[in-house]
Amino acid sequence: TMARRPFVLLLVFLSELRMGSMSGVQVRSPKARIVSWGMPARLRDIDNHIINVLADGIEQVASNLCSFVAIGKLNNSLVTWGNTSCNSFEPPPAMFRNHARKVVSTLKAFAVLRKDGRVSSWGSQSYGGNHSTVRNVLLSKRFNVISRTAGDLIGGAFCALEADTGAIVTWGHPLKGGDSSTVSHAIRAEGGALNISSSASSFAAITRNSSVHTWGYRVGGGDSQSVRHLLASEVAKVYANNFAFVALKRNGSVVAWGNFFYGGYIPIDTRRELESSAVVEVYSCSNAFAAVNKQGTIIAWGGVESGDTTSVRAELSGNKTKLKQMFSNTNSFAALMKDGSLVTWGNKDQGGDHHYVSFDAPIKTIVAADNAYAAILENGNVVCWGSQGQGGDAQSVNLNLRNIQTVDASCCAFGAVDRDGRVITWGDTRYGGDSRTVSGKLRLVFI
Image (cartoon, rainbow, N blue to C red):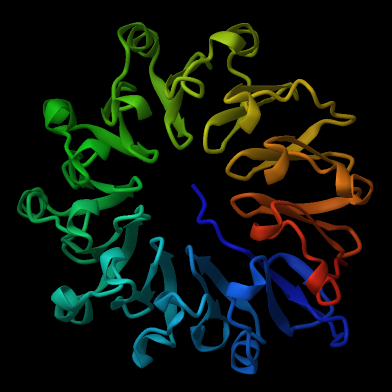
């Protein structure tokens, strides 16, 4: 699920008009600026240093529960801002403030991968902010992947994948993936890891011989001993939700493990459905999985509501082989079919039921917040459903949701940009649903 954070928006000030282009949106200024809103009392202001670093463009913006991090295009410099009471807004060591390639976050810490392959972290110790036990390795080896378990109230962890050998290096809370001592030797013996997947509290590594090894929170996917024989070979891909994993094997079969209530166990009837035809793709929400087989059938399992398609089985079976795109949030799925129809299931108050809203044009795409959805229609209108107080009700701004170009979401609010560059927000005011305090600064120019 999304960190409960304020909004951040890449924008241009209209007072600096010149020709330029940025992030696929043509604008009349090369001077990019960042504006944050939501929980203003808890946010450290964006100072002139941050503005200057990001003036030539922005490569990436990352966030956690407390703070934001942005990588600017100029020297790939890294800047931070956010909650002054949370130490993850403090910058990393000086040598990591330039030439940054990627930043990932746990709930209260960040890790940065430099272009030369070195890695560092900062923030809360129990969430991976203290990497002193592996600092020498992170500075002396070259890494090409960093991953994380977002964590919970106890902690989180980071994992770095060494580029040359596939060896893994982990740090952070030992019960949340920060301790990989039980699997690191086996991973090295199998030629190293090719890819790392993560749930909220565990990691899963696919090795060079296509087997899977897991570690972290035992009942959240960190213990895969019960299916170890099924994960020993031929694994093509691993998917995760908050507390369970699913492996898709090359023959189209699937293997699940982790928390029973999150899809870590596949019921017998569901397994029979999965075995009727090879699975080609798997999707997840926070507590369930949905698989699509070669026949186009969608089969779900896991959470009591999101893992049960009984109420929409007729709709799904009538659209076999026609899935266009799948979307999900905390406790529901939304399947957009190639014929333009929409099928939703899961918790009805969190987006699992869209039948009380109407669409006056075909759906172009859908954006998910934790408990609501916003659909952008082909005519530029936006239709929302789900939790009313968290973005599912846009009546207060409905007249402004016309000619919309793009929509983004925080955990509990949405922000839309129309054809004239105006920014419209709705949802929980604590998480970005009310941008009136910064409305004078919010404007994008589309050409």
